[in-house]
Length: 242
Image 1: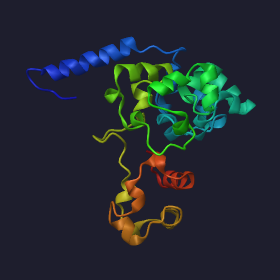
Image 2: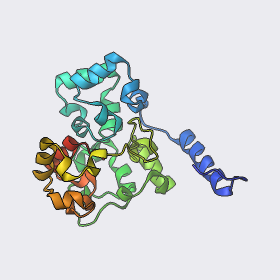
Image 3: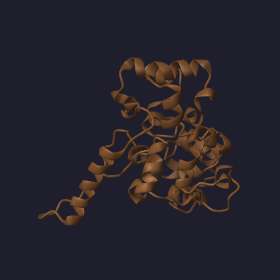
Image 4: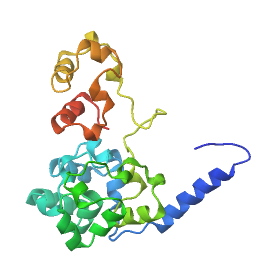
């Protein structure tokens, strides 16, 4: 992303790393390439299936792990959802690996499926998996480029790669920010519509003072995915999503 003349050694290293990643990344199943296309680039039948059978909207399609359905393993899907997933091109294996990453399975089931060891290489233990550990898995706080080669290979075996590990936003965005700017957040409280005020002041506990003073709400010190389900749903109703 930097452009200097002459090109420094660091840039060559980054380019080389990117090339190596794309060449060396191997997955246990064929990658469903269509899942990594922006929603507006899907053909109309695929958009319809994704919306009507799987509950996607453009926002949840364009942001990996945001759609509620992606929290479910293949066997947890309804027959209608499995039909939709199959029509798009998923199989049980590609859904469980690339979409769910086996998160809907128990720790013992991971061992039975032969994938527990990959999570262990990423720092997971049974306590972490069952939400009884007191610390956070260190790799959960790192970008793809910060993982070691061993960790990246373990992540590949769980069907992660840079785009879905870093949760790259595929939403069309012509700004210089990594995500489209939530313009509504910078509108004074008194200028918000009644519905927006109701949502912000209800589940999200905003007051006029907290809204008008950016960063003063305790909630804004948390990450989107760490919000409680009902609060995250309210945030999405407002227009936040990551």
